[in-house]
Length: 124
Image 1 (tube, rainbow, N blue to C red):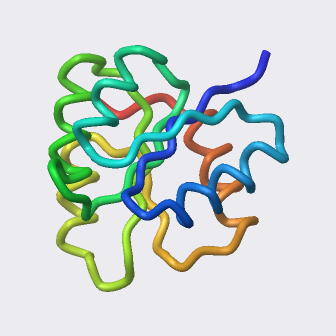
Image 2 (image 1 turned 180 degrees about the horizontal axis):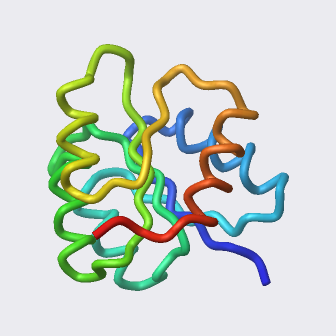
Image 3 (image 1 turned 30 degrees about the vertical axis):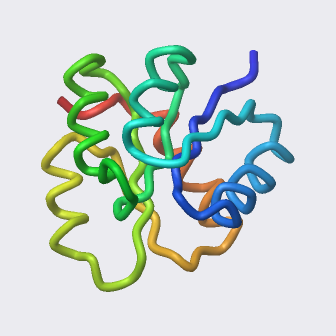
């Protein structure tokens, strides 16, 4: 059974990069362009994992994370952020994110972190 990942980022090249890395490993990828889109797609698709950018237009990744976790307390969300956003990363972890990736990232780090998140129990 293949795992489903919802890749959320307002930058098309970031979505493409993560999609390429994960689809080569057999993951089924869905994409969303901002937090609001992510919440809608999450409800439709119920992915096994979400990779969520923090800074996006319309709705931030942190707001989307909180809404998704309210709807589904066992949602697995992996935050993706640029360097130097420690305060936001801490806030994301406190809001229920399982882990985070810092941009720019290595493909092996993406795969490693995704696998780790899928194997562990969601945080409550």
